[in-house]
Image (cartoon, rainbow, N blue to C red; front, side, top):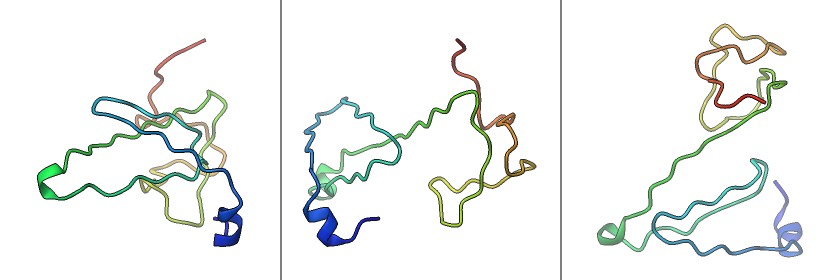
Length: 91
């Protein structure tokens, strides 16, 4: 994570969205969203999809990931042959 002085010099892009809109970006993009206006306007719902190529392999991280991802039998470097990583498209 960049420190504040680096963030001040980076380009910031605002992307207004409405109900039903979707935003897609690279997983390493620093991103945020403002809080909702209060309990009576608590309409924000989010879902996150992560797609990887067929050459992706399992790797552990020294930091907390979101969602937390345990090996469940996978070791470092193993292909993602696991029900948690379904194939959604082929070439």
